[in-house]
Amino acid sequence: MNSSKRIVVEFLIECGALKFGEFRLKSGRISPFFINIGCVSSGKRLDFLGDSLAQAIHAEFPGVSLLFGPAYKGISLATAVAGAYWRRYGKDLAVCFDRKEAKDHGEGGNMIGTIPSPTDEIVIIDDVLSDGATKVVAIQSIERAFKVKPVGVTIAVNRAPKSASVPFRAVSLIDLGDIRDYLSETGDARAGVVQTFWEAAS
Image (cartoon, rainbow, N blue to C red; front, side, top):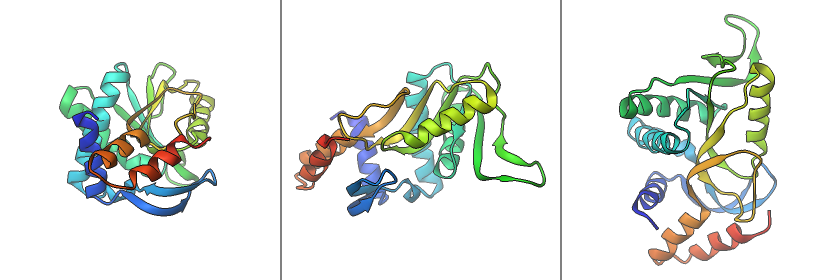
């Protein structure tokens, strides 16, 4: 595996974001491991992950103008990426995120930050990708509300099965194959568990 992917896997393990056990995913599927990006919960950790995601976005979506972070974990990630993008590339990206429930007082509504315009190139930022269902909902809600379709989704970890496909452009820092490779290279027997899950039918 290449060094950049190895660094990301080691980061997830070091901060406790990669856990093994038995976990039920939102899709209903039972997973032998869980990626908990909520463990990326300090300035240093958010700075690293934000910078890594910023580099991926710059490479794959160079025309990006607005980052959308779905509640809840996408909020801190989009904010971290915007800061990292400005620092690394000198481009000031707008940020927008949603509420789980619309607010009926103050500024009201269910969106916070810069409201997307039809000319924006929007990239959705989130923690993980499983079956893509929640990302489809986010894309459709943005398109319906603002008449603009996001150009893609950038996530930290793609944990979808190897055979899975999604109806949008998705870019990830690592996938399950990378985690498997790291575990295999370091002599960790759990590489087989990850391999089995990754190759299972979606």
